[in-house]
Image (cartoon, rainbow, N blue to C red; front, top):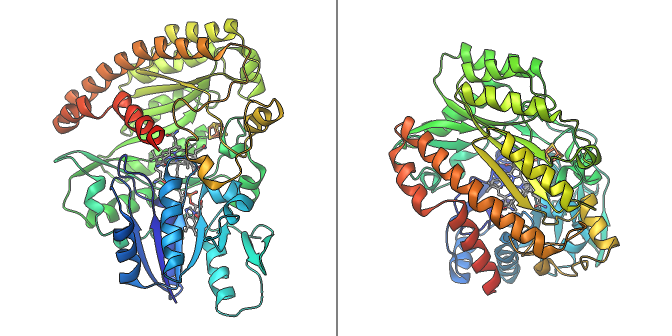
Length: 468
Ligand code: B12
Ligand code: SF4
């Protein structure tokens, strides 16, 4: 049986489809004939997709999808695959949280819910005549949708086969610079927390995706070396953050020990939360080559912090940030405006906090709803959002300008605060980022950053989605 994995993605930037290459390598090891196409960063036409699918002539087209702009192309790919008589299965975050809606699209035969390796293996056996229904899936049986229970076990991400980077033909597109490219690597699964606005607060994401798991630094470095062995491009850095990486001090100690023992000089970027960060962790990561970290704060209001289950001591957050910066680690702190019942006073607390912290980047977002989250459900309950009835209606989700206001502040005020703060913060960040590039002789990145930065990216995405 032949399986063609496709990442329709968007034309805005090339990113490796880590979910797809993990599942593809596992399925290949089970003896199936697999191929991978990643359309990220590329403009595509119907003719091209038709040609690509016909060339490999698979039995099954397996499509990886996030909620948002990538959906338009994912639907196009699926419609074409069906026209060519192929079976079509979707996997990834979108089908995990919206299996019924995804299956209501006529050209999608089945969806993977959560982790893909075992579920797809069982689905392939099912298609081959094994009577047992695969777990962790949504199926169409005699025209009716059936959601099967979660898998009983989850894959050991430390010992599973190496992600199939070798199946990506145009791998060099992820490394556009002449020197000092970075690579995005799989480093963990899930998240132990449940912030109300986030995908990981969804019960199905947790039960079908399994518990939070981290990979050792040793295994990450093996992935790093493997990618390097497949390209002549210069890669000197890795992004190992996922959504949550450094969950505690003992894991951090072990992680940096392995990096140091490897004797390798690799820059890395990671993710953590202020409530778990300690001063000792700052010393450890700075000493082991960490160049950047992202930490979620979300609000300067104690009420909102409590609502989100974050127990951030705001004074400690400032201290940790200063220490990180003094140690040469670039710090991004994330915030959101438009939390449930948020008042102007609470927004002012966030703004005040942003002024008092010495982060390189204060990344302030305006709340944009994502399906399957508690905030999204609140938007529906408060009639701030109408439940989309088709896949296509989810195309604008996550895009700037497509919001729902569940705060107590008029949307016009949220917008003006958002633009005012970001004009200042993002300009400041632009300068800090350029300084980072110059200090490390990353000259290509320095010049490219004038053309491709947060402002131009968001503008391009907004204009493209709005033009549809
Ligand atoms: C790296 C990353 C990115 C990267 C690269 C994305 C990519 N190439 O997939 C970049 C920076 C581009 C990105 C952008 C965005 N991201 Co992002 N991203 C992530 C992150 C941190 C890691 C993803 C990852 O690679 N994981 C490792 C792999 C192995 O896990 P996985 O993808 O879940 O795959 C498993 C299963 O889902 C399944 N599976 C996945 N794909 C497929 C395909 C098939 C065919 C099958 C069978 C199975 C399968 O099997 C895999 C193995 O078990 C996740 C958070 C997370 N922990 O998942 C957020 C996450 C996926 N991103 C998210 C969001 C919201 C976005 C943005 C919309 C943000 C924004 N507003 O701009 C954009 C959208 C971009 C787009 N093109 O559509 C959400 C998705 C929510 C949703 N409902 O879709 C997540 C879950 C973050 C969150 N907590 O909310 N992201
Ligand atoms: S800690 Fe981050 S990834 Fe985890 S639930 Fe909260 S926002 Fe989501």
